[in-house]
Image (cartoon, rainbow, N blue to C red):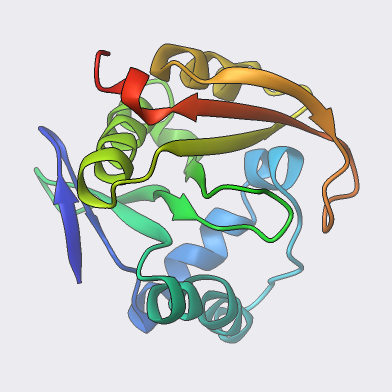
Amino acid sequence: MHILDTERLSLREFTPLDAPFLLRLVNEPGWIRNINDPGVRTAEEALAWAEGRLFKAYRELGHGFWAVQRREDGALLGMCGLFKRPALPEPDLGYALLAEHEGRGYALEAARACVAHARDGLGWPVLMAITAVDNPRSTGLLAKLGFVEQGQEQLEGYDEPSRVFRLALQQAARR
């Protein structure tokens, strides 16, 4: 299902056919370093991971992490979306790109569109985000979007503390 478009990108729900891409994404060194190692090593495990992590959220919440595709050629670049983690009081923004697509503004473009969708499409008043403690690229991206750091927390399901950010979406309308 198509979710939204930006100038260069299209965001859509992942499908079972995306399992090989997801296998590659969750095994990227940056994913493992900055998010976690989900232990997904085969396409079958990637499909099971997607069912529990992505498809279930689409069905139960009506939102989640979406596939980020380049409109020009349909290439899958990564994921970006809105998710409600049990460990956080409000839904949060999340994103990850294959390393080969970093540094081209795709993550910021997709994240900006997701923030607008949370505010304008879903009517949410607040959005959160988390990063690894030492992830300056994500911290910089969140700052560009207007997120304000709330401190560090040890969140359930993570081995290390996370930096927690918050954005009042009424303020985001002015960015």
